[in-house]
Every structure is written in structure tokens, then in C-alpha cells.
Amino acid sequence: MSEPRFPTTPPRKLTPLNALIFSSRWLQLPLYLGLILAQCVYVFHFWVELKDLIGAAMGNVASLQHLLDAVAVPGAPRPEKLNEATIMLVVLGLIDVVMISNLLIMVIVGGYETFVSRMHLENHPDQPEWLSHVNASVLKTKLAMAIVGISSIHLLKTFINAGAYRSEVIIAQTVIHTVFLLSALAIAYTDRIMTNTQAAAKANH
Image (cartoon, rainbow, N blue to C red; front, side, top):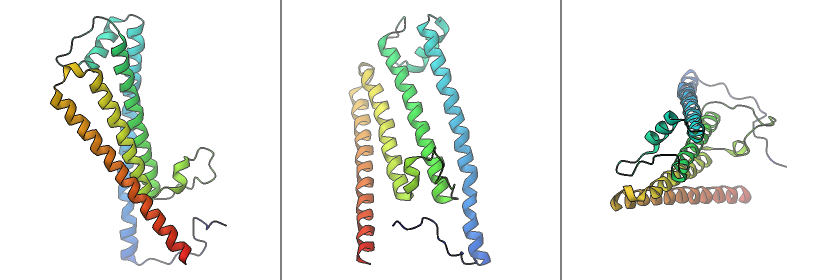
């Protein structure tokens, strides 16, 4: 039988100093509310880009110009009409927005649950699967993997327009992406070692 997530014994009364220090975690609340506003900005940006993509596909010149201004790379030839490369760059931009939005959700929900207050979502049908076992270490691993995914999108956009970039820029971006990937693997490996160590310690007791 698994151990209960919440203690059944009443908590000890905190001293005034300890209560003040513990209550200071609520200072993070405005930060998470600010991230929710940032999420709203990303949603608005997503729909603006999607509206321009649909408008350009239907022949709207103004929408096409907005898209080209958004995805154009200095030094690259500017297309006269909507082509496959432009569509791909716009779609990759939309995917990038979605992945950053997912990253924001993980930070907002996971961070609030871990560092501020329990949300008591145990019996909620829409509770995220990862939230049931989230902690600071798991949150760091998920954030690192999300950053790797976002970096992959940006690197792919660079490769699509490789002719407009110097080789030094492409190499630098590839190296940065590799560093992100190795960092995520190192964080995941460290988390695995800590989890195995804790499991072994519980088994010995």
C-alpha cells in the first residue's frame, strides 16, 4: 500500500518567525500571475500569425507581407508569393509558440504546486499526469527537455534558411543546441541517480 501524500497528524504550530519565513513563499504568486499574462500574449500572437497564414493562403496581399516580414531573414531572397518554405517557417513558428506555452504551463502549475501551495487536484479528471509526482528535480528535467525542443525548432528554422547565414552562425547555433541537449541529459541522469538512491535508502529501512 502506498504511503499517503498528505500527513494525517495535525501540523505543529509554527513560531512567528518560522511562520513569517514560510509565508514568504506567497511572494512568488505575482510572478506566476505575470506568467499567466505572458501566456495570454502568446495566445494572441499565435492567432495573429495563424490569421495571416490563412489570409495569405487565400490571396490576401497584406497578410502575405506580414508573414514575410515575420519570417524573412536578412540576405535571403524574398519570395513573391506564399511558397512551401514560407509555410514551413510560419508553421514552425506556431509550433515554437505552442512549445513555449507548454513550458509556461509547466512552470506555472508545477512551480506553484511545488513552491507555493498544493492545488488538491488528485481527483480532478484533467489533472496532468506529471503533476502527481512533480518535485523540484522532476520539474527541472521537464523544463530542460522543453528547452531542448524549443532549441530544435529554432535550429531547424536556421537550417531551412542556411544559405542566408554564415557557417560560423550555423556552427554556433548547433553547438549551443548540443550544450542544451547534454545539459538536459545530465539533469535527467542526476535525477535518476537521486531517485535510485532514495529508493535504496527506503528499502534498507
